[in-house]
Length: 270
Image: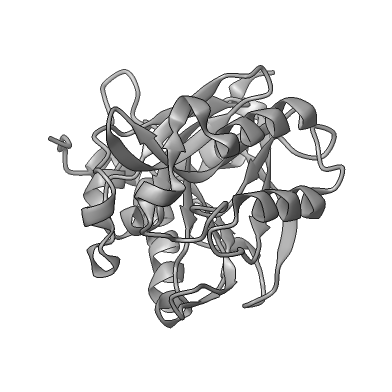
């Protein structure tokens, strides 16, 4: 399939999470997904720390990456369903703890991105190590930048890193989150702003419900197009799964007709 005419079907999973209960959370998500597979989707997106909620008990909840039951579950789901599945998990590696976004593919490959910006207001920077690298993956002709929750507030980290050979580093930004309801307005604005300034699609998947710390989450998961317009946008507080479609030809056409990227300031992260 030509990348010019490719499309990508993405399934957003906005769900409640049981506090620090990986088995129950994985079972509930499996039940929510039902028979969702490659016949209807290419990519399943779960919230941040979907197995535990946004826990700071990293020493108690994180398993070594190569031994993690949740990571193995994600890989098995991707293989069984025939599509990519992504979301973040607390893991341990080399004596450090990470809020790690996993990219599990149907052929058994695992890629990952470690959350760069750690939410100090919850003490995340004291319980997890900072990620060092931006990660771009590919699916159906789309280049996809991975990000986690608080990363969304830092536009320099997420800014397109263009080159003379490749003016657009990525076509889709995916952000998985546990973003509390009192800050839902910034969440929505930032998803749209990142799409507009980077001339890309943006998918933001957030949880709903309440956690053990008394935080309430309203969801507001969205697919935003390259003009900042929400194309899939759902009522607050409702658990759902929904599959949306992204079109590469429409994205390329808009980039050609509105080449704001040509006037962008050049910079480099680090």
